[in-house]
Length: 149
Image (cartoon, rainbow, N blue to C red):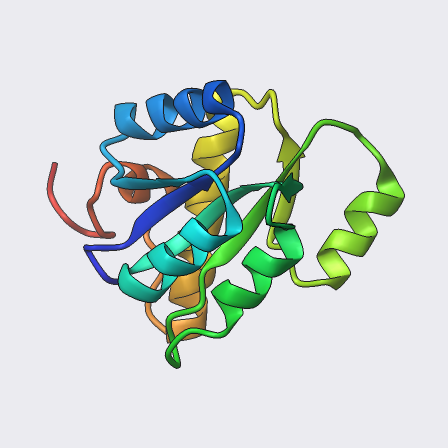
């Protein structure tokens, strides 16, 4: 697993960005912020982003544009996109998953929701790479299975 793996918070809402970045900072996870699709594309082109927390829409596009940019990176560099949604709608969830969204969570998410998405994205990355899966605690604390505390 790449130790430089980072997360992008893509939201046009300043408070949402601050909230998510604060949660991720407490976990010692590096983050990039974007407030529109153009910034998302630029960051995805230049950085090793493994996970994107993404608003539904932006002034210059929507989450599908971010999904496309995340999928069209160099081979093996796929970023997983977590859609931040203000509504709990089963049909919206189904459509988003069919379009390639990794997961859908509430825009007013709890720290444990964010942490769980990070764990799941890292596990997905490791599964795809064929490496062993460390425990959830090890992922959050930067240790691999079998490492001493």
